[in-house]
Image 1 (cartoon, protein in one colour):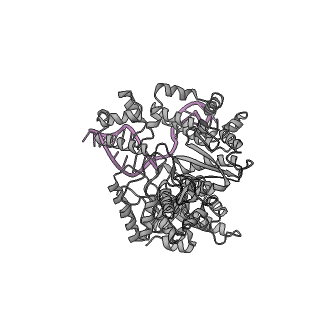
Image 2 (cartoon, helix red, strand yellow; image 1 turned 90 degrees about the vertical axis):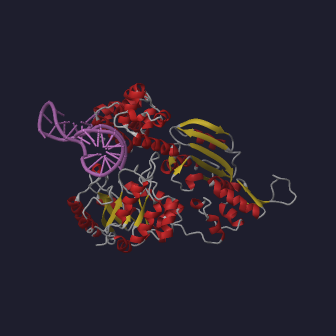
Image 3 (cartoon, rainbow, N blue to C red; image 1 turned 30 degrees about the vertical axis):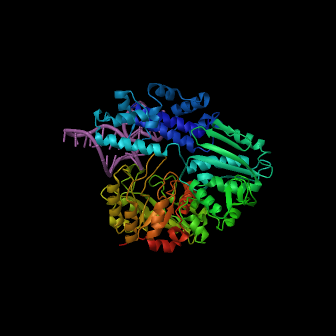
Length: 591
DNA sequence: GCCGTTTTCGGCCCGACTGTTTTCAGTCG
């Protein structure tokens, strides 16, 4: 069992213990141990022979070591099994529902012996949940809303997870003999925030007929629970707690047509096929063909293009459309008239201005974050630790914020004395919390001393859209706020983003010269395509940040770039493609 | 259950917010 699976088992145990009303600190120790196991670069299985090495991990003592050893030996944990027998597996699913916590789930079980999403929904609809202590009609409604939004995302996977799976599989297929290209198509290639399944395409001169070894290598991938289809051209599998993965084997000669076809979207392909028909051609996954007069229906005509996507689009009088734009949202018209935007690229990003350090809930120091940014070719960063409202993150009050500001300045001047660091900038910043009434949780005089203030909402994303809008509108008016942080909260594959009047907030940002953050961390699906287009329309600038809590999180910038491209953004729309001096001018708090 | 001692138990990220209260429990970050 790998580290991720062990961590998952420990977390589920913690969840069940919480429902059982166990000591919160004991529960927490299971979660902390899960973090340690998952964060450990070496597999637990390889360390089993030297238990003292496992004991050196933070948060793992003798008791937890015994648990880990038991999991490695038996593939399960006795305590976990026991709790599952006492309660029900459905409870773990119920925890995913916004507004339902362990206490309520335990209460529902106690009173109704119910532990599944469907049954809880039924009880809520019948108005029976309000009989429970401290529950009323509003709480019932909230749970029903939570169930609805849970259903809307269940069965989908974060693109970061999908990407990791796809890359792991592709890495095993690429070196195989006879494989000239192996890549992911589908919504993953289009850069969607979530994907339902993974489409992989492998092509080579002798494929598909000579691809038995490729199919066999694919079927050896660990964690396959079911083979759905297994033919010479197509193999479909389902992964344990993971998506379905489709592999297609293609001849090199039609690889472009297949890539185009399987990249989609469906809407884009329909529009493209209509365009082909209007030009006397037909398009399918094998190529673009000319329709011949008098030919029988279905009889293939002369092949026009199939080898590359560029050739196919060109044959339809279109410039090649980037995958992120293929949603039938005007991209065909733009490609036909040469008006496709020059979409932003990762190499144009010059700095990341949202990150945390050990001063609050980050894992690295100011200097370590700076070094990681420089390694990635950045010219500047901003240190933006949390403010006091985020108490669980050890957020800064005014006094600590000012002391931290001095440390940031000192770190910058120290680093700049080194060679090759002369021009590196470390902006002093903060991620300040927007309270329910729209006020910020730190004094303006302190905020005015910082280079960059990111104003974010951190609580209550089940709030009514109306009150959330009011909250954001109020914050945008604050003279120190020049950057609105992730206003749509986290999705984590089970939570709806914040609901608010996007257009009203975008317009207010335009009025007050406030930029909006596109948070690139994979579980934050902030500014969706249409939000970004509203920003472009109203001239609201975007900043793509990773919200890094660890140096490696800086690499998440690619997810933000993909989302930005889906929103038709160019370098001109994104402020952190500019020099440090320009960025500073654009974001310095107004006094 | 872990940790760090003040060596054998007490502390462990805690405040904002809501809905239900008649003073607070539950959820969330």
